[in-house]
Length: 113
Length: 110
Image (spheres, rainbow over the protein chains, first blue to last red):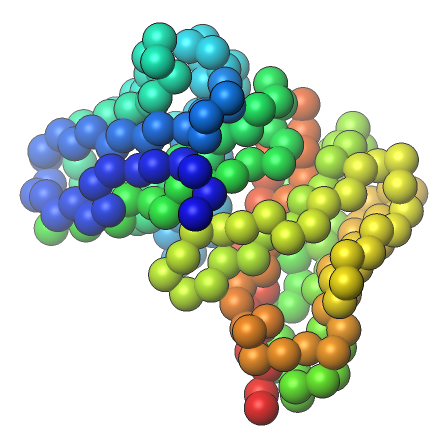
C-alpha cells in the first residue's frame, strides 16, 4: 500500500456526462500529480498541485480541471466526456515540490460508454 | 524529460537470465531518472532511481546506468525470476514534470 488513496476504483458513465475523481495523498506529502494511462498513450502527465496551488500543467484538456483543497486532497473533474476519455487515471503524491519519488494510488478506471 | 523513448517494447527472457531496458531522453536539463514497475492491474511502483551526478546505482538484482553525454539510461535486472514479470517504465524529470517512456513488458519464462 503506497498510502495514496483514490476513489472510486471504477466509474462507468455515458458520453457527455461529468465525473469527479478523488485523491488523498500520503500523510505529509504536499504535492499531488494526476496522470492518465491508456493503452496507446502510456502514462501522460495532466497536472500537479503543490500545497493548494497549481504548479505544473501537462496535456490536460480544457474539459478537465482539478483542484487541491486545504486538507491537501485533490479532485480531478472531467466534463463533456467522450469515448476517448476512457482510461485509467492515477494520482500520485510526493513530499518534494518537484516530481521526484512519486507514490501512485491504485487508480480510477473510467469507462465512457 | 520531455520526450522519453524506451526500448524494447516487449522482452521475453529465460528465468535466471538478465534483462536490459534502454531509454533515451531529449531534455539535457533532466537531472533525475526513476524506474517504475507496474504489475498487471496494479499501480506503478518506484523500484530504483538515479540522479545526474551519479553514473551507476545498484540495489540487489537491479542496477541503473546513466550516460548524460549520450542522454541515455538503462535498467539491468540480473538473475530474473517469475515475479519480475511486469511492465517497466523509465522516466526523466524536466523542470516541472516527469515524462515517462512507453513501457517495456517483461516476461520471465520458467
